[in-house]
Image 1 (cartoon, one colour):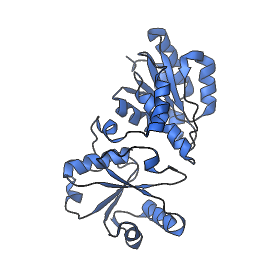
Image 2: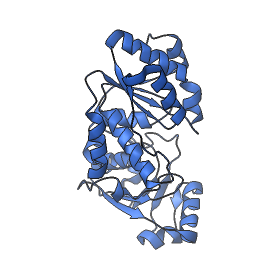
Image 3: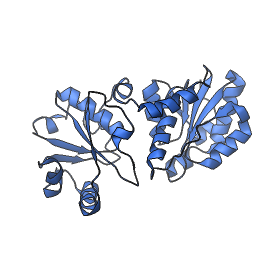
Image 4: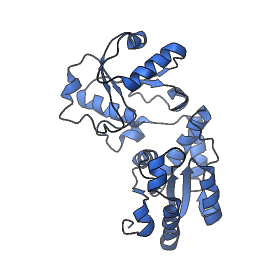
Length: 274
């Protein structure tokens, strides 16, 4: 979503067409785009389901190739050998409104990225991404229990080391207790760890709600479940999120709401919380 939003914003700045190739990849996003979002009339998204040898070759090249040209492998898919920018996780805002001349004169440019690489306006996420009706139905069900005091809590665990180290559970617990004391708050919890749900439910009882959905990236149902969480967070008053996780960042942009990242310092002091 971050890459598509960046590409859309960049294409608008250049007044050029944008085509997105969405790769269904079991370990990353095991779902076709068309199963998740409605067509928005602004960006053409092509689902790629290549399997076997060709897919392995392509993914290997995407991960290893530096700025240069994809040759025969890319040609088999789109028929042309474009200029390629293979951006790492650290190339945020790689293109700005000054250096976009790097791609202005190319007849075809491919950008490989999983992050924002160009400035994105606040409204872009809501404008581009509209979940399929079946997914939005689940979002609406959860929203019915929200009120003006519902705060989003996003706790990223599992394989995300910076989030686990930087945003301890006790920090979330202290933050939630403070919000209850000051604002009589209730919470929507999005987390990829079942133990976290059980712990916070035991601690805060009916003040905590969450969606009982599969969140495994290996299954399409898990990707859909993550979208339910994402959009439910976006409907909250504000979000307390995990360090270095982009999930709560995207949710805050969809809903145009505040995001506060819980940290070890925040667990000791609440100076950053107004």
